[in-house]
Image (tube, rainbow, N blue to C red; front, side, top):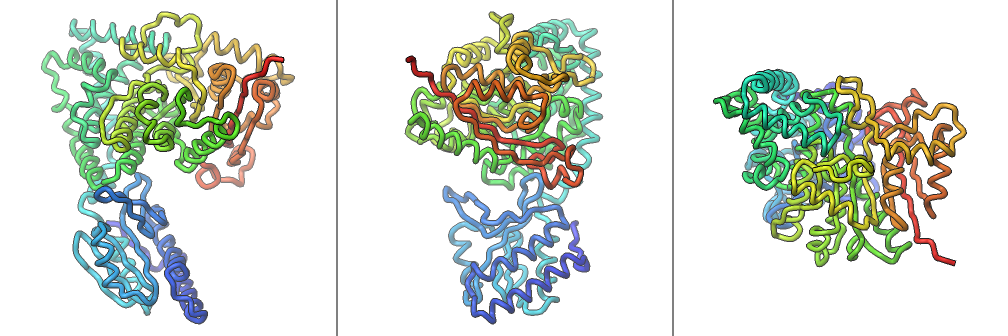
Length: 585
């Protein structure tokens, strides 16, 4: 059980500051909620820091079809809410205000109703505390009760998360041993695995090792239950074209009496902890954020090298919101068009778990969403797990916005950079349906490219040295443009995947369109990128760059966790490039 350290200097100072602020406001006869609530929010933040939680103010909740706005919520790194706060002013009848809030659907589990002189605390559906807080001892008692409460579903969650990294590694090793044994002895599995490996090499990477394919199977087996249960999607394996194909290989693997469920029993406790905890989350977008964090933790336990190779860092929602709004504004201003308009095809080439696509769907007019969803929204992902999550997130968001389910045919399991390669011509992209989707996307007149390119890419070396993969056509395009125009002696930095992403997107949009990326910011000033800057200036009519700073390597006084929007070591920038069709003279 977490404990609030009431002797901590920061908390003692916050309590003292609270009473001082309330007294000063009383002297000024300022009693309204807007005047008095900031003092208490500062106190809550001081407490939350002890638990590594964040006080999210003006927190949005969805209850029975309506959206509620709670003054604050205590949110942890997994996006789990540990408590709610609702502030009232000095003249409110707090007990009556509590009942009013419950009548409109406010939660009754660990919610603190607070006025400057009184607190009412509800936990697990009942009132557990009603107290004056005019004295520090009373206030401390209320804060302790609020912060130290553990919802029943969370009791084993924290311990399970800690254990998971160790257990998932152990289970993965066990599954790997079974796979390798079956690859020697099980003819049905040998054939299925060989065929699937060849498909993956054609679809994803011609240098893909058998070990990488084994890891894909393990990822699928370890997480398939989570997708079915957390998202309440029992048809997931049947509906998802890639999962369906992988299941065929898994069935061949288990044909000789190997029981998947029996083998994974040691993880039952963790699965149950995820499922119970996810069941406490009503809003699907919160559930998405929760599962994204579970997914990141999965990779840190399952394969740190995979996490490093692919740069598993997800874009903060405020950046996603800003970029989508900016693209919409620039479409209207520069082209007289909109994300909702017919013919404005949008592509996220590195979709991750789908944040950009979800935000774009919410920006599109409801009357236009069905048609856009069906044929003008496109995205790619090269890694299996985020591909699964993105597909479900996008389909559920469509259901949420329209009230009807429809599969999203715009998502492809494919390496975006591979699409530029001349040699791939008639490659099969894993399944017939996935291949058809890839071809439809290649034929589409993409007008907007938006997303967060990887800061590393699928490694070329089949061992674990994390080298960037070679793409002959795309590498040649970088060489004959960005490198050719550079005066730098050392041009190695131009092999970075985000540089390839700019080159690829610049070519992909054709005569006109918009490219919007959030990337490493080294290209903005570093000498190695002088040719890239020159080419971008020639290739586009307008360029907007927002340097978000955070380069810890250049400024050791900075901290990646507090001064960088991604919590990484390199600087970050948002770049929006605009190309207009040239008028013939």
